[in-house]
Image (cartoon, rainbow, N blue to C red):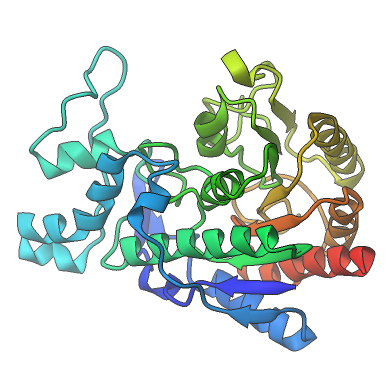
Length: 348
């Protein structure tokens, strides 16, 4: 399996995030990807390569240009406010919620940061844009690898992407790598593509990007948004709209769900993806469904991820895995590579 590794990911290293009224150390850290890379090397699974840069216009196929322009200059503008800001990350503190205007781009940097975000837990650092942009490049490289006839590929990148929407960041995500990959597959000639999100947290950004489209089917298995982040999307009655009606499938599960129930949800998701007639599958590979994850609530064990990989291979589709969440840092490498190992063994 070809692995496209974002060697710029360490440039994004947040100091703190805001969590329930206090600053806490970030859960999303460079060691997450480091552990996965180490496990890939230890097992000799996959050929690791970097990806060529892509034009911002490619990312603009799913993201608003003014949002990408903001990300590209955000750190410099943060420093321009106060040179001492170099010692702390940028976090938003204002948001244009209901009845506020979002069509007018404020001159104020803090106001624009709020306009383009939905939480205070996703710090912008000196290297955020470089890392996020290169993550999108890795996603494009992975998609193009499938278009050339490959059975599978793995995009090993951070920051993750599935919470990033058309014009906003949040949930540690800035560029939606899975959405970029799905759009690249469409632009490469495939008529129908599916994105399957198996992260504990609903992929709200991916859903929103494709919600009114019938060419990209989105399915997500995640913690019930009544109690779990990101709270405001991910309910079972969200089925898509317009041309995208019935092309959106949410399978929310209660905190404490074990592998048997989770596996049944996976079976249903793959069944719907097959019925959609998808020609390729993008998997938002979150590993925070693990029982030891510090910010999640499912109870999957490391060996269960082998079965997950086998089930995904059973779909018989060219498959691109895109690394998302998973915050039990010491175990995330084993869990991620178990999925890839299970897939490779079944697909062989």
